[in-house]
View 1: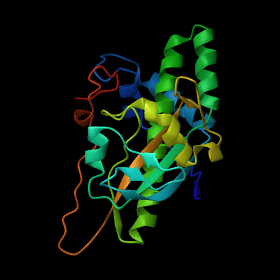
View 2 (view 1 turned 45 degrees about the horizontal axis):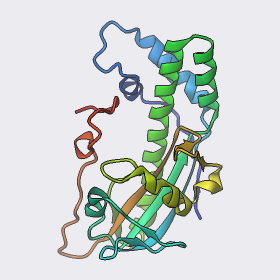
View 3 (view 1 turned 180 degrees about the horizontal axis):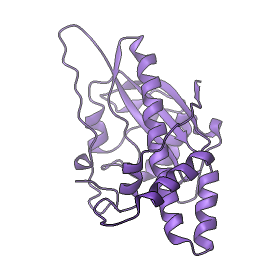
View 4 (view 1 turned 30 degrees about the vertical axis):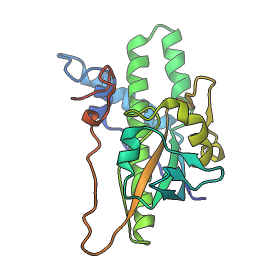
Length: 224
């Protein structure tokens, strides 16, 4: 089971601004955002893991142990034509989360919000980096990847997180689930990636991952 622990060298300031709900804010001191990113960078503990399984499109079953049934029209459609799937988990650890809580408890609300947003941007960057590693590995077997799809996205019910979590290997990097099915550490991601065999003369099906593909229209991070 491959383990990923590549460091993040810089946190995306623009994404941090967006996650903080400041995308359209005027006259906000950019130094505060940059400082939050710099502070978060020192606290990151990036860890990731992934497993590759066979996938049966007809039965919608991931051939893991135990087997996992994929439920939800959008995720099933997204995996159409895939012969395998990569199930991944990544986290940036608990250090940033503790500092966010500490700032909030001390009444430093702006610092808390910005640090939390920086940690969110960081875990998405970590997930992007892990995707690139997986892409290089599956390319050796002539597979191409769809973009990652997480429980709770689109119509993939978050209730599926409990069973899906088990097959990602997330527990091997210290992750766990709360009783409300939230990932612990909080700044973590689990996701499934469809893998389609590349054959001569066959067009690879893909769709761009955008907020437009998700039904959560009230999401504060939505950018469309």
